[in-house]
Length: 169
Image: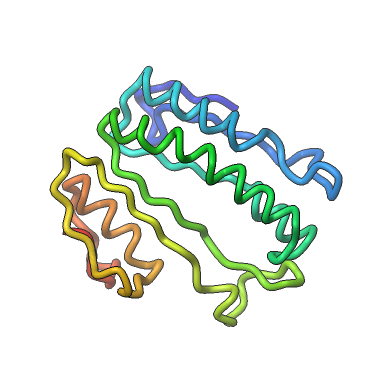
């Protein structure tokens, strides 16, 4: 459940299971608790890169559909909490990308070819101390551009297998 070993590919991490998840308890632990865990790991280890993946909205979508009061309430909660955490992480020197790994249908399905399952929002919050030039506001960013952008920001060579050109300069 916890990794703190500088000799491993993932050096510092906290993992959780979805054991016990059901319609009455769709996801554990809360995203707010996970944001605090992430903040503590950042303070302790100052990683070059940090990935946070929550299953809360995914679980709620499967159980109630994307257009549900449960999704609405959770989005408002996460939005309010991120308003506190984003400036904190930026002050610690981080750029933030907030996105999803997929969309979802009204019936809770994902992985299909419909736009509702494939089109997702991508928000980029640059650290104010970094001179980043992003695309125009109406530019459609492919999800396959995320990894090349992260590698470029970290100064790591982009593998030839990644065909999408980074959009943040």
